[in-house]
Image (tube, rainbow over all chains, first blue to last red; front, top):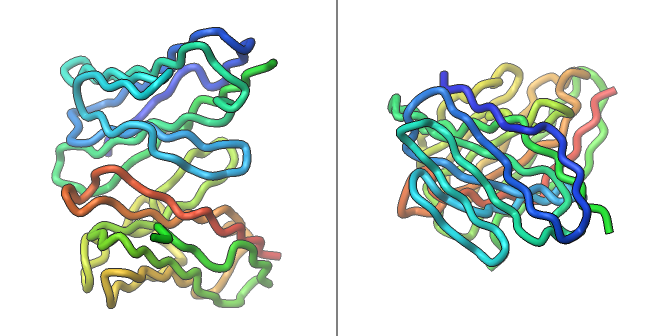
Length: 110
Length: 114
């Protein structure tokens, strides 16, 4: 099945810094999403982005489907951005399965 | 609009006991799924459903059963609990425009098997 790798596994920032999280996937995808899991365990969908670029406030995401990667940008980070960021994909092999990477744990210090 | 509702939020079982984790959504989503989350493993798909009466296996289906008799409900059954099933379980559903479009998660159910 399709493989999803996220980097870096851990990231520590000072408040106000910018960061880039990366998601590589091993095959063509029909669907790619980014999620944020806050320190209380709640999972929130950030972007549905199988290709192209989207922005939502301080967050933006770009997926280059032909090169099999996606990037999540966080600008002017805040302590509330802390948590784990997951990338998830559905391969084009006909399966409906959304496969998750292992996540990037982000800690933003005040 | 409650979104995706999971019950119970916490449960402790003894090895060999059975139980059902309930999941309900009120968004008329066709696609529903169950994941388990273990430290360092991300989220792994257990079972999923693309509509009432249709279910399929995910990455880690052994020891779990599901059914989808209505659009709204997608219960997950543990037939004979084992310590390896200690985990946090998430139910999720997706928008009807696309079977696996934006995914919405419940708050999770933390299960401990002794």
